[in-house]
Image 1 (cartoon, rainbow over the protein chains, first blue to last red):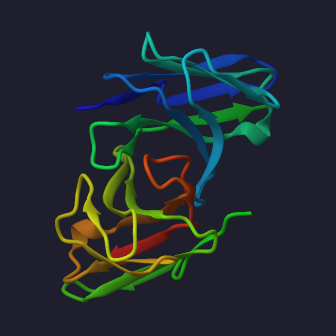
Image 2: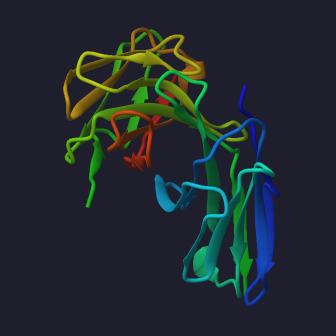
Length: 113
Length: 114
């Protein structure tokens, strides 16, 4: 059974600092997705990582995937308040019928001035 | 832009009522999904559908059913709502037929069962 663990679950950062959110998963998969959720809102797709070594960057966020280590990271550079949100990783579960995404529990990021 | 529309953002129902949550997508996606989101539990898949009139159980289908009569519409039905079904319900669609690609989510329906 595929399990997805994110850490930390809560992260309070100061503006201008760097930090990394980690997403570990327990069985083989080569597709990983990062989503952002603002309070009271739905999930918005951030990154789609489809192969080992994939790296995607958008603004102050950079995501990478290491399928051998079963690890993805979401790196935040010089955080700003607008990045405050909950971030979810989701991993493709090939063991399921037609596949489905297994989500981590989310990392609630708060960026303070 | 892909648009996934959930008909009701907020609903309040009583225990035992039948509840319909409607979801419509406008991008001709084959796959559609219903998740529920609860604090501390993340997102859990209730049902999904990869074609009209097709449905597959997700991780927590008990107490729910679904209907997909048209490609663009996927409905979640609570036959007899219970208080433990108070939750945020998220509908999503995906453009790939074989294998699941990136999911596009609706705005969510927050259901309270009294």
